[in-house]
Length: 215
View 1 (spheres, rainbow, N blue to C red):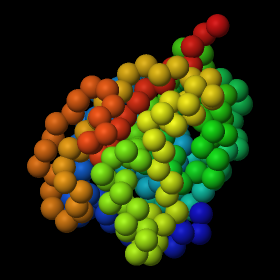
View 2: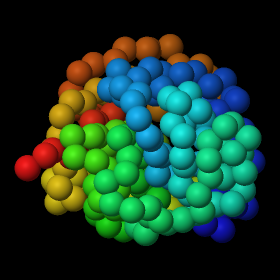
View 3: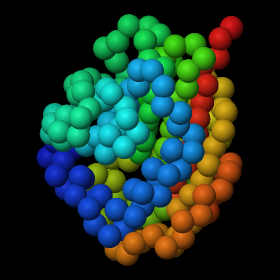
C-alpha cells in the first residue's frame, strides 16, 4: 500500500508514455474480447482506474488512497479495502475484474475466493496478467533485481498455478486469449498487435475469463 501511494503518479504516468499507451490499448482490446458489460461490476486492485473507466466498471477496490483518488476522477466509485477482505455482501456483483494486480496481492487464493463470494451465480471473473512463462516476466524480474520500486514486489504465477488458483477458489475456466507478442522493452510503441486464442508462453499479456457456475 505504501509503495503504491508513494509512486502513484509514476505508476499512472507509465500509461502516457509511448510504450505504455500502446500496450494499454492492446491489453484493453484483449480484455474487451472477453468482457460483456452487464449489471453491477467491480474491479479488484483498480489502481488509477484506467481499465475500469474504459470498460464501464462502476466500483473499484484498492489499498492505495493515492490511486483511488485518480480512479475517482475517472468516474469510478473508490473503496479502500484489501482484495482478501472485500467489504461487500455475498453474491452482489454481475462481473469482476483483476488486471495486473494479482501479482501484488498478499494472498492470491484468498483474493480469488473473495471475488467468488461477492459474485452472483452464473457471473464471471476476468483476469489480465503477465504469466511467469512469458519473456516479459523475466524482463520485469530483471527490473526488480535492479531495485525497481514496484516490480520488486511482484510475484508472477505460471499458467498451471493460475488454473489451480481459480479452481481452488471455485471458478471454472471459460475462455482465454494472449497478446503482446513483442520483444520485451518499454520505450517504443507496440508494433505487433496480434491476439491469439488460448495460452501462449511467448505473449506478454494473458486474459482469462472464469465462471461462477450455478449448482
